[in-house]
Image 1 (cartoon, rainbow, N blue to C red):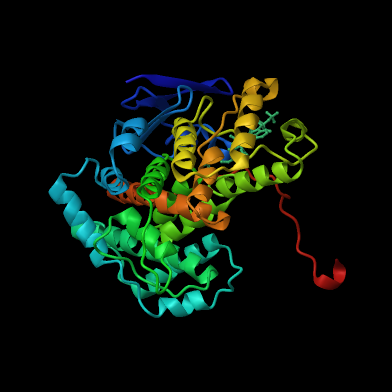
Image 2 (cartoon, rainbow, N blue to C red):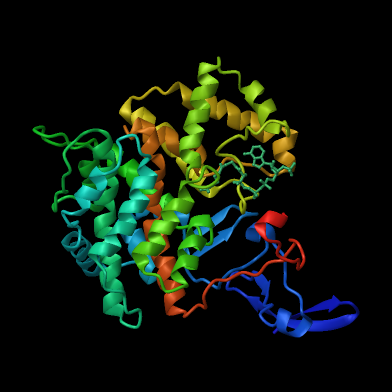
Length: 426
Ligand code: ACO
């Protein structure tokens, strides 16, 4: 086994190097503080591996993304979302029998307690769907209070199919509430993604139908979002779960983490930015200059990534898909041209080249969501629906590997010991 030597104040310490199946290496510093009396300091965990994981492989320098060894390109082209969910969670692609049983079990568990409707009713219509979804997911615990015995595969499986069944219902309801539509359930004869679409958009008294291209595009988008190793929301799910909080509580926390505009909320922020550029007359150069100006808080949303220092492979697939879907649906969205113009300029601009800033998954996804008729405020909810299998898979892995509670340390920079003064003496 290779080793790393760290020298501190003239004294040398040796630590093992752990190597992954794709040859990435990490110094195992578990004993660093005990032996050398120091910790590592790594703001934003830019160089910190929080776990060993067998779920998703990502090479940001080369733009590679694989789920359980399968390339994202092959899965996006050939698999459907539920197969990918099964693959991520259980490690192998399902047989037809396994997949049918998985879906039957999910459908069996899709009913949500009627009392949940009262909770939803308490939210104003103006509430952001991500906040509502996070709260409703957390509220599910109250109606499913028994904690999961992670030693039992059966218990674990039950919790997994429950959340996969109920989550799309809750997501659809957040939209229906906004649109003043009656709360509904899906149709057992439809596939997972079509059923989700039906629950979101079905109108009372009208028979439901949807263009096949819409469901195919939605399915692909969900696959592309399904997992992305230790990103902010997934790390949150693992962190919350590491205290042995249940699956629903961990997922609810993940939804909150995803909501932020630097993470999943970027898909909403991108379309708002493109609209702003359009309304301002479409001068992309002006906004490029703003993005580069350090005194201006404006950032080119949908650009840059903590891990990808090359094209985000998901962005490549989505860009192609955006062209196809808009063509198939006959949608002419002027912001697509603005987006392409911005991308071209950024890729040739020294500021972006030097910092290796490329379009990320969110740059084009909003344009497709909009073409599919999904309102802007629901974009990040769609991301959450896609990421759900990844969160589940990572939570399950963390519990099966008996990971210790996540508890980073710090370097204290506050005031040293001082004497307390009574209020009248301050
Ligand atoms: N526009 C302009 N400048 C940028 C951008 C951007 N979108 N992204 C990074 N930079 C610059 C930074 O200002 C910094 O410049 P400096 O070295 O001169 O100080 C440099 O590039 C490095 O950026 P950091 O913020 O340090 O990189 P970090 O890895 O911490 O952040 C992040 C990554 C949050 C994604 C960032 O690129 C960003 O804010 N992008 C816009 C938001 C976005 O699209 N988020 C979605 C990410 S994908 C996802 O979560 C699904």
